[in-house]
Amino acid sequence: LWVNLLKHSANKLNELSEDWKKLEVDACKVEIDQLQSDEESFRELLKRCPWGDPSTTAFAPQRVSRDVVVSSHGLATRAIVECELSRAFWELRRVTASDDSNAEEQGKQVRILSKAAIHHLRLLEIEKAHACLTRAYSLSCSWSPLDGGNFDVGFLEYTTKLVAAKS
Image (tube, rainbow, N blue to C red; front, top):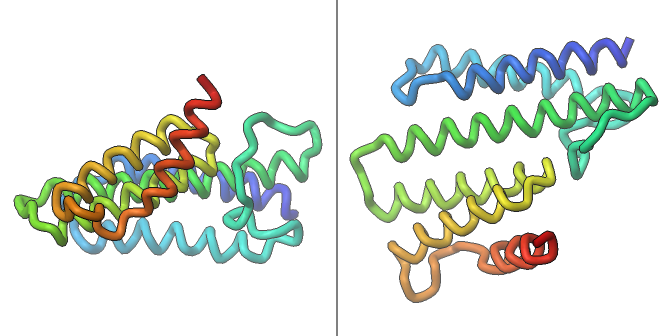
């Protein structure tokens, strides 16, 4: 039963991920609420998985296991992280579409980019995580040039070292 639920949830979360990617930045509240509600429903269901909540798995698997339980759990983990990433990039598109370019809006962008970096790391997409953090740092310095605002420079340093190690 749970293997099928994991696979079904992964498919539905993949569909939701695509919906977040297609969602217009000026979408109506009803559309946004529906996507959030659908995503939350699957997250709540998966929290009850007897093999652990896929959303709390540190990293999404890079290849498919021959073990059907491990494979299904991995599919759900990857789908959750990719859905979270798609939602974060929709939020970023929405914030950047605003005509406001004040410190508060840039702070939102920094927070969203930092969150996206975490999702990329969970997918082991180190270069993409680093790119998000580099962009976030650049934004944070533009509105708080002395200290980079509340940006976690250590996180950028960490991804820089990871990218360097891979090159």
